[in-house]
Image (cartoon, rainbow, N blue to C red; front, side, top):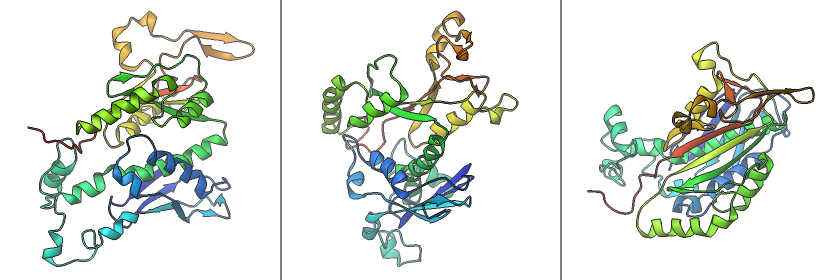
Length: 321
């Protein structure tokens, strides 16, 4: 499977094209819209999230509620575009209109300046519009299609936040993937420990009052994964490497780890390696899952545990020196 996304933050629409989804998969717009609603929800969300109410439209690859095997095209309309018709016009316009909302002051930590230098823009809006996190709308849509396919194979996926701006969230031990998914869905801040909910909300409120932003760490757990996905034979066939690239390609994500991750660098080998067990009932299993479900770039039958670290967003409400 492969995909492409297109569209600008304040353009008329966002688009994704997916190739490689087999024919006959039951798929509806609501399968995608459910995840789009989750993306736009959450405590402390920005003003843009309140403006848009994203709904996907299929324009190819789905007929009568099932995929056809052809490339799937999905569109999401940007409602806010109506306020930007001149500024984001595809046709040439008068110079006096071109100067409206022109950006010449770049934000540290964003693609504004480097994109302007690379592509020789005199209006940094050309960088901002495409590099905006609004693009992740279609990543979520593509991911929802992938999750729909994986559900047919009894693969479960859950994600939750484990660090909020330096505040670590205590995660109860031995939660199933389904329990993590349920608890995170019930939380406005996508955490599994409800006792910390109000503390995190208060912290977010204080950060906003200070005119600042925070980063965090998100954990994804995947259960029901068979042994042997990925390969050790070439660098670009290793599944953990491909997932790492996917994670750090998300806007503002600066690092990724599996299982113990960077903690493994502080431990001895005997404290890290997952002891191999065998039984007639379960076959090969592991006593622990410190490696996050991967060995040699391949899945080993344990749940995949991957975390991504997101830096604070660069749109601050106070000036830097």
